[in-house]
Image 1 (cartoon, rainbow, N blue to C red):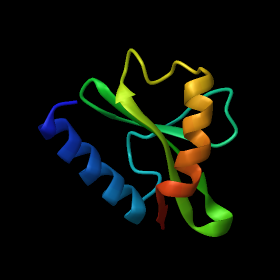
Image 2: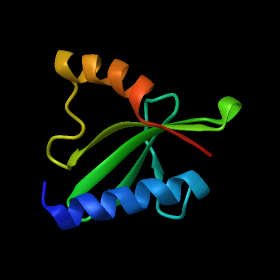
Image 3: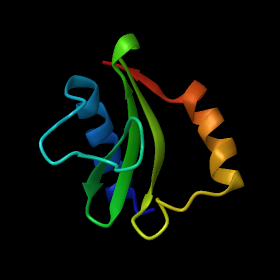
Image 4: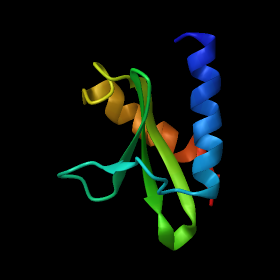
Length: 88
């Protein structure tokens, strides 16, 4: 992932801590609590846990790859749920 995209993604994630449902965010259909933010050809998929005032970033990647779910992804979710949590 290019460095300029990485910086933009970090900036967006930091803004999500202030406003977890900004204009332009899309709730993913057929999911209980997943949202998507776009930045160019990249997507940030995240979960909001209002009860705990928590945002969990579940996946970041290119739009052609970010929606693919596989065993590696499932294992990564378990890691991400414990590693990258932002209090809102």
